[in-house]
Every structure is written in structure tokens, then in C-alpha cells.
Image (cartoon, rainbow, N blue to C red; front, side, top):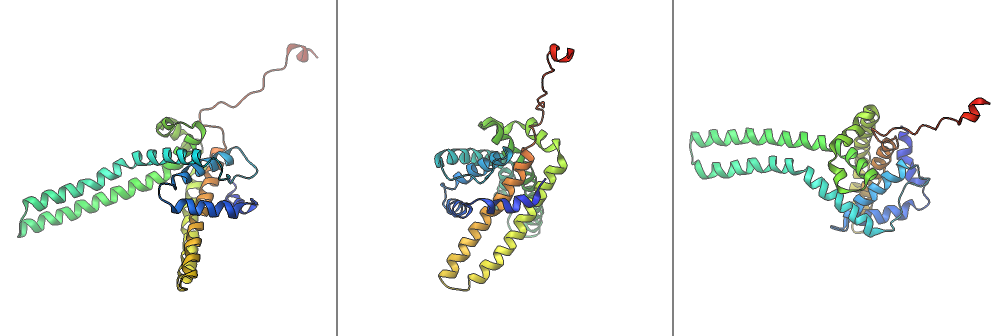
Length: 249
């Protein structure tokens, strides 16, 4: 895996600045920002197909938006367990408020609720972390197949992870570390610029938006490299044997 390439490929594109500015604007506009998901899928495809300039152009915006909306719907479905876990403590809270008054019993019940709430918060955090690990394989498989059902073909998705766990873990770990470090640097710069009224605020917003886009570039390239390997379970093509006449010679 070429980790350095994931960090510098962006700047090898002659139009990286215009593409990034458009991307930053797209990500900042609700509803319109669904197109960013489609852009990421296209980036994955470009890297896995070894395109000379992996950064997609912002043409075919409608197609990108539809693809991104499919990504959003799938992500929402995957988030349902976390939403359920978040709702359970709220239901318990409502029941406790209705059936408890004041006194030792109420204090005990509220203490129990606090403990249960903390447990569910931990479960949600663990599930969220697991999703960050699983989502890239989902996106890779969808990028290869291109239909909504691909988001839930768990067997094939799992094979993407297990085919080369070391490579997959490296891409996942580096993408998280890159997000943290690049975000930290950008946060410091934005904080300094934020001291300057008006122009400083605008520059701080632009830097924050670009950093978000750049981190996703790194993510897309790293997992595009993971996806560049033959799809799990796909047989490598074997050249046919030479004809009998050649063997005779």
C-alpha cells in the first residue's frame, strides 16, 4: 500500500483547487451535499481502476447526487440499531417520570437510569466505531456492483475485509489518524484566523471546508488501493493453454 500517494495525489491534479472548492461548497449545502457521497464512490472507482488523475470532475452532478442519496439511505439503515439504543433510555426516562415521585425510591430509580443510560451510551459508541470499520468495505462493494442491494450483501462485504486484513486495517487506521492530525492542524489555523473579523472568519470557514474534503480524498485513495485488488472470491484470469501445434513445435 502506497500511503504517501494517498496524501499527495490530490496536488498532482492540475484542477485540484477548483475541484476541491466545488467539493467544499457542495458539502456545506444541505440536500445538495448528497452528491458528495457519489463523488466519493467515483473516487474509489477511479483509484481501483488506476486512473491517471483519480480526482473526479464535477460533471454528471445528477448521477453523483443519486448515488450519494443511495449511500445516505444505506447509512441510515445501518444506523437503525444505534437509534433504537438511543431511544430505549428515553422511553425508560418517561416511564420513571410517570411512576416515581420523591424520596429514596425515586433516587434509586434515577440512579439506575443513569447507569443504564451510561451503558447504552457505551454500546452506541462501540457500534459507531464498528461502523467506521465496516463502512469502507460497504462502499467498495457498492462501487464495484452499483446497485442498492450491494450495500447489504454481507458475505461479499466481509470477504473484502478478510481478503487482506492487514491492508484493510492499515487503510482504516491511517484514515482515522489523518483525520485527527489534519483536523487538528486545520483547527489551530482556523482558530487563529477566527480572531480576524469578517475576512478571517471567511478564511477559517474555507480552510475547515477544504480540510474536510482533503481528509475524504485520503480516505478514498487508501480504500481505493484496497479495492484495486481483485474482488474477493473472484477467480484470477488464467491464459488458455497453447494450441497442440505450438506444443508439437
